Image (spheres, rainbow, N blue to C red):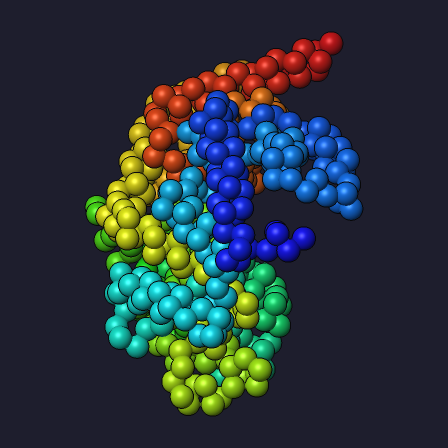
Length: 481
Ligand SMILES: Cc1ncc(COP(=O)(O)O)c(C=O)c1O
């Protein structure tokens, strides 16, 4: 069994094994003609249930053959131009290489004695990102597992900075289009769901600052404490950006912590043409960035940044076995003092490899391409009488709904759109997402692949219309008979 341990004596076997795996994946990616096979749970579950985990196959080739059946064949492929579903991006090769390196070396970014240079590489990337945000020298941050964790940590810091014993008085303000991790965080932080005050959005799905001002005023009048305002720079559904400068002014006026959730919009930090859309972000006390959304990084790769690095102390605990106070006094760098996690992946390496290979402009121009594509997609949808499209995109999502020619009830149109999404997924021809707006069922394209073309968008719209019309045709016939 020792032959499976990766060490000096098994380097050749490691090379062979990983190369064989890479070859399989490379062939798979090259031969994939659809983002998905359309397999259902009922097709995949028996394949996985059948595997006897107590009877190992022992041999890499056999394991990879089995993997083809249980996973690779029916996986969802994000690199395919007709994957238009969720906020999960196609990945760049330097980052995938970084992933292979980091798992083989297996650094853990909690302490210096488990990471050494890894700690300093992560710190350089935090400083680099903070510089792009517009923060000064006291900024700091740490890599996290994703936007949800970054938001949680930001709100933890905000709660501690509010310096209020009575948690029931704390209020968090975020727009009706903000991510659900704000509510989850409030719950986890002992504030309860009612602590989150939902602020309405305008027609463009941006937080209405007049409503925010009113809500902050009411909060003060009721003797409650405005703990934080969460501004979203790139809402999950619409890619809309809340008005950051106005929100910053209100936060300053009411003494609220300003958090910017730029999980999606962080790609603008490297955009050669659109960086100005984030103006005002530099006023935030904390910022969430998800490199695994708009920097083309594999999951996971995210960070929380703070304007004042000393606020990260609210996540600091000392353990004699790991990060004793003595180590801090000796100024041995560690990241565990800043993180909610202990053992932590060296995800920063992927971004490092990416920047060292492609450069920031390279990443930013890929993000620009998908924003340009969304603008073209919007023109297509706005001119198409079969569709109602919600807002002109700022980033790269399009929310729309098939509307039939014939007069039909809104509920029936909801069902037709739901059906079209499911039927499309089952066909494997394309993957699209769905959401609700104004209580009605809509469909969503999240465009993150620069390889997707306007013709792909047009073709998928035709497929959706076909499925929806077929559904309505069948249902109208049934209703009539
Ligand atoms: C605006 C926003 N914030 C936070 C998150 C959560 O990020 P993650 O899925 O990395 O936890 C998302 C995910 O889609 C998001 O869109």
